[in-house]
Amino acid sequence: MNQVSNNALLSFALDLASAVTQPNRFEQLVYAVRATINCDAVVLLSHSNGVLTPLAQRGLSEDLMGRRFIIDEHPRLKAISRGHYPVRFPADSDLPDPYDGMVLGHDENLPVHSCMGVPLYLEGKLIGVVTLDSILPGVFDDIDARALEIIGTMAAMTLNTAILMEQLENQSQHAQNVLKVIGEQNHEMIGQSKAMQDLKQSINLVASSDFAILIEGETGVGKELVARALHEQSARSEAPMVYVNCAAIPHHLIESELFGHVKGAFTGADRDRDGKFLLADGGTLLLDEIGELPLEVQGTLLRAIQNQEIQAVGKDQIRKVNVRIIAATNRHLKTEVAENRFRADLFHRLSVFPIQVPALRDRQGDIALLAGFFAERFRRKLGLQQLTLSASAINLLDAYHWPGNVRELEHVISRAALFSKAESSKADNPKGITVITSTHLTGLQIDNSAKEKIQKNELEPRLEKHKPIDLRLETETYQRNLIRKALEDNQGNWTKAAQQLSLDRANLARLAKRLGIFVAKEIRS
Image 1 (cartoon, rainbow, N blue to C red):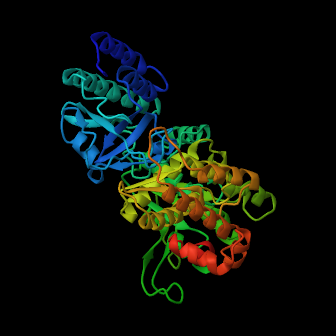
Image 2 (cartoon, helix red, strand yellow; image 1 turned 180 degrees about the vertical axis):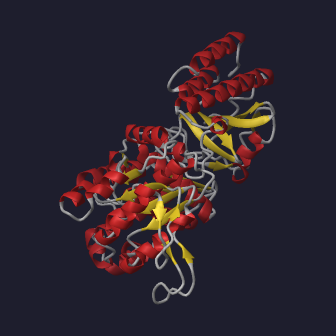
Image 3 (cartoon, rainbow, N blue to C red; image 1 turned 45 degrees about the horizontal axis):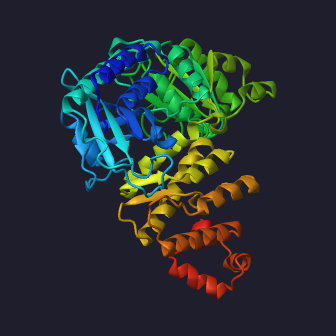
């Protein structure tokens, strides 16, 4: 029996009272729920604009924390959110579960057997949800409904207090921001690593000022996302943020692009045109790839930034503007200055507050979260019921060096989603769970011994106690993965792959066709 006694409710209340004062307050709330109700997995999610965002969880794969659940796309979450009372789903419910395949220590295709959700309402407004799952059926059936309502009410009050304290500790500068639920911004920065915490702290510190910011970091780390966060948290957030890619503008048009021009100022100037400085007046101007700006234009830009004055090409009149400058570059500008490719005075003017965006390989623990975030995005785009990542897939992602950073990770997950969808569509998949395995993650070059260990774990059939085994299906899956690996090792060359597998090419082609493998194009693409 999974009943809740009065003593358990009292302990729960005491645990919640201490949770809000802890730095890991959301995790403490989850611990309190799990200590009160026995379950295999529990998730605390905040609600904002029809989207549920995980704040803390226990018992599910780590990529869950990067996912964002649109309520209308998940029938169980929709059922939980639309009422004011806890919802218990029958073990034979035909509604897809958003966590199917994510319970730690169990096969990816093992569905959740018991599921319960508690909506968290405060003053008539849904602020969050707590979900509880168990692999055993009927676990939550005997819990008193009144006890669940009490738990939900106490958890809602604690969650609201915890969110407000979290925002106050982030030193939000505007009163309206204190009332916003975490995750409400359009451009969310995913990550809980120390490197990302330091980055977010720097953004919170300087966003409200009018300081010029220099954002440095490798290609693909998310410098534009940092710039958007700085703008959205500033007093200029209601004004425009204007983007300029300095590397994409022809040299002879840069001044016109920045400051505007009048009709007839040069060949092709058939009308007056406002420059980016004027368009950003009152707001923020993001000068991306600032290191590509030619020296002859840097002096003009410096004067515009210093004096907040611009002069359109072909016009004598000088106009005042009020623009905050954010510059971004993947170059090391100090080195560029030392080698006379960038003006020292412009560098010092731009770097009043420098921000270094960490490379993905330096963000310990964030790769799984980002992979989950992208997996959920591509699940929606591909119309899949569920898209999960196997443990071996996450291990492979963690072992890779990521020279292309977050952008490369996004592309890898998008390709893997397509491969796993194609493979899943050819197999018997009644629960609709599509799993990204390490064999779907093409193009990742890691240490051979590490790769072999990861893929060996992936290929091993998962034998569970009391679970019937389909030997034919397990054998075909094993063969399919071996063939995919051989093709990948040989860059899609079927003849060499056949030699590696001790088969002739014709037999390999027939076997691959029977198994539904059409990967030659995938490997080369």
